[in-house]
Amino acid sequence: MQKSVLGVDLGGTKLLIGEMNTENQLLNYRRFPSDVSTQENAIRLIKKCICVYLKEEELMGTISEISVAVVGRVDPDVGTWFEIHPGNSKKINLKMELQEEFNLPVTVTNDVTAAAEAERKYGIGRSVENFVYLNVGTGIAGRIISGGEFVSGGNFNAGEVGHTVVSMGEAPICSCGRKGCIEAFASGLGMSNEIHRLKERYPTRMPVHDGERVSIDLLMSAYEQGDSLAKAVIERAASGLAELIMNLVRVSDPEAVIVGGGVMSNANFFRLVNDRLKPKTMRFVAYQLQQTKMDTNFITLKGCGSLGIEALQERWKTIEQGVV
Image (cartoon, rainbow, N blue to C red):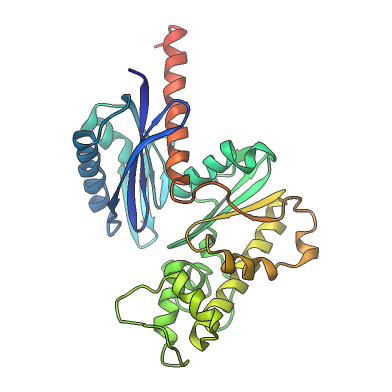
C-alpha cells in the first residue's frame, strides 16, 4: 500500500482534512465546522476530527505523515503555534501534541504560507521566482516569495499585511489595536462588520440581521443594483485593497501578484480592485494582478500536503543514506 499524507487545513470557518499521495494528488477529503475561538479549542477539534476521519473514511494509502496548516503565527521549524491573532495568544507546541496523540511525524505551518507554497510549487511559481500571494477571505494576509524563497521574518510574522494601515480617515479599530488596518474593512468579515456598523447611515434593501454575516456575493449583488450601503462598503474595500497591493509592489518588486481567498474569488469584486491599480505603479509587474488558477477550496490543503510530502521524502533520503 502506498504511503500517504494526511493534510489538515484549519481556517476561520472550516476545518478540511484530506489524504494525499506522494504526487500530491488529493485522494479523499472531508469538511468539518471550525472553531478558532481559542488555540486549545482548535487543537481539541483537530484531534477529534482526525480521529473521526481515520475511523470513518476509507484510506487509500498508509498514512505516514500529518501536515497541519493553522491560522495565526507559527514557527514551522519547531512546530510551535504562538497565536491566532494578537489578542488570542498562547505558546503551544502543536507538532509535539499531535505526534504524541497519533504516533506519526507531524509538520505545522501557517494557512496562508501553505496556500502560497501551493502557488509556488504548482501555480505562478513555475513561471517566476518573485511574487506576492495575497489571501483575502475571512481575514487578510499575504506572503512574499523572493528568489523562489519565502520571506519569513525574525518572528515568523512577515506577510501579515492585513494589519497595514491604508486609511487615515474614519475607520474601525482593528483587533491589533490600530486604526485604519485594511483587514478591518476589506476582508470578508471586515466588510460584513462595516455593513452592520453603517446600516443606519445608508438606505439599503439588503437583509441585514444582527449577528449574521453578510457574504461578499450578497454585497456585490446589492452593489450592482445600486444599493447605497453596499456601494459605500464595497468601494472603500476595493480602493483599500488596491492601495495595499500597490504598496506591496513598491516594497517587494514582484513579477506577479496572485490573489486568493473567498472575497477575491468574486470576479466582479476582483475587477473593481484591478481597475483601481495605477499603471505607473504596476509597470514592472510582468504578470500583473491575477486570481489564482488553483482551486481556492483546496489550495491550503494542497500546500500543507506538499510540505508534508517534502518532510516524508527527506526522512526516506536520510534512512537510505544510513543517517540516524
